[in-house]
Length: 500
Image 1 (cartoon, rainbow, N blue to C red):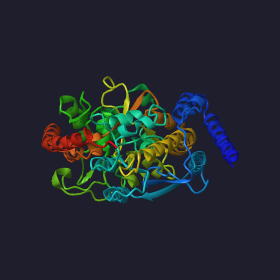
Image 2 (image 1 turned 90 degrees about the vertical axis):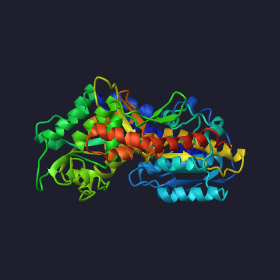
Image 3 (image 1 turned 180 degrees about the vertical axis):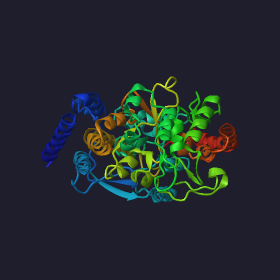
Image 4 (image 1 turned 180 degrees about the horizontal axis):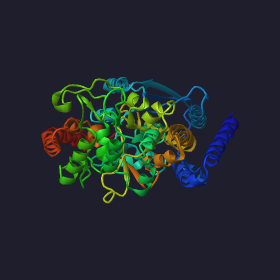
């Protein structure tokens, strides 16, 4: 049986490599090389130092979140699709090699959050790991639910490419963290913001698509705004929006402009940013370009699913929440969303679309395009109910193997088939997605720490669409007392707790 599974693993790896090479023409060689780097190189020395262990059919329990846009599956019962086959074979191979049995329980983010919190509160050890959205995990970490990574980093090789070390470092406060991020689950990748555009509308108006601008490094907020102005139609059923999106796109625009609402200090702590001239300029242009009234009452250029009487000077909520429908019906030129949103709504539509990264603010000051990882991006935590150091080491061994063989078996299928072949609509979009994910040196990703740690500044700023310079100063100053108090609570816990 062991030889059979090993043979199947080799076949999968060969097919994955063949798919990557066969899908690329000469113009796509750079993207293909990037994909191989992202998906795994299969060299023996990369996997030769995996930790050893055999656990006599131990049932390894995973509590896992369910997403309405991201790929979160941790176990597949069949091989009906290539991605299911990769997950299935990954799990069966690890079970065989380590002598374990995976049991995966999947719940919505709130139920998942409550489940793990209640178990820890009663000191009941049921789950070895818990995956959930990062904002929920951040709340739980401050309640003593998870073990600090400092307690088990010695059992993991966090420098291996299947761990997203930069992202984990960014979630570290006062040299302490409670989150593991890596290739075990793909929702983190699915949670990166980008823009889709309607090629046909741009063609009809004689407007060039943004691909060349991205390549030249001149894809900016101002250029995006000009495109929406040049393609706009006012009034009636033919009304056309420039950009449709959830309100979260405002944070993605700010991140694309090089603005982070929460900054890291030299001591490794967090602090609320200062409303300097650059931040005000970026914020002012985001509001003026994309959130101004279009003369149609409560309708704005950006339609959102966020209902609030604060919009349009207190005139009331938006008439509907279906921003994706506006794009899919041809009534919008651009749609903002995560990569998972793009895959969910676009491939089955009749829209001739492309995908590009969030625009820069200034092509002279910013060398890279910046993609924001949405606060829903899932991270892994190890519950404090772990019964012993030996159990903790066993959990880390399983996690290392999950990461390693996800990198080798799952990530290539996800990236080549789910992202490049299914989400991208043309070769150019496939290259653009490399930039969105930060796999191309022209792009990078950041996290909105303000929202992940529920500090509230982003929400306060998003609701201000009057005078920008006054609004952002008052929003930040108004939040500073609240934010500073919350940060002190975070520092108090992160600086002294979480050790196992």
